[in-house]
Amino acid sequence: MGTVTRAHLAETIYTQVGLSRNESAALLESVLARVARALEEGQSVKISGFGTFSVRQKGRRVGRNPKTGVEVPILPRRVLVFRPSQVLKAHVNHTSPPSGGDDE
Image (cartoon, rainbow, N blue to C red):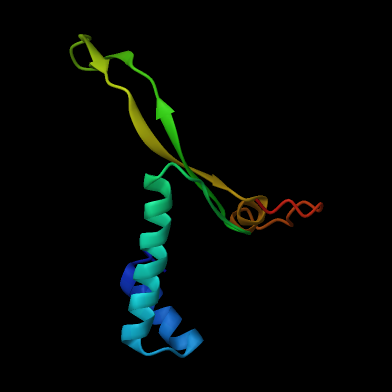
């Protein structure tokens, strides 16, 4: 299938939902903007059966340039973390999801 692009997602919405192409693209952009805004605000975004996106704060630490071995400071920063649901993991591994209803 290759890389999933915004255009591909909008086209899929268009063919499966029945909205116009412009409405499909606008819907997709609206959803992506809402997810990005929530993450910017430090909120987690959970998509049932898919996974959870969250932002984690990483502290200042000392790193090392692998070529020269020189120590360099790595500044504190926020990083985006994705934790896949058990359903997605099972789908990727072609196995049955564990029972118990925890689809994250």
